[in-house]
Image: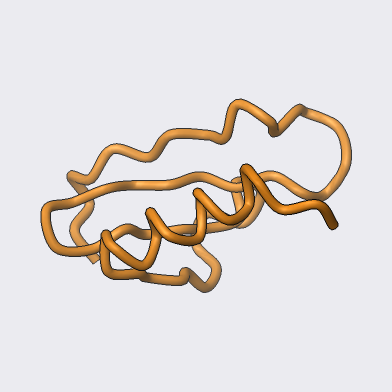
Amino acid sequence: MNAKIAWIKSSYSSNEGGQCIEVAETPNVVHVRDSKDKSGPQLTFEPTAWKAFVTFAATAEV
């Protein structure tokens, strides 16, 4: 993993609870990780797939 990517914590994450994520965007990939386990596993998405997920999550009624 490139150590120079800039991780951004979700604005919906707080310092309480266990549901916090960080996202790092690069030109070809979007990285997603647990903000409380920075050395743990990460998910990676193509930017178009990440955009589709974010759009769905913002509009879905679940």
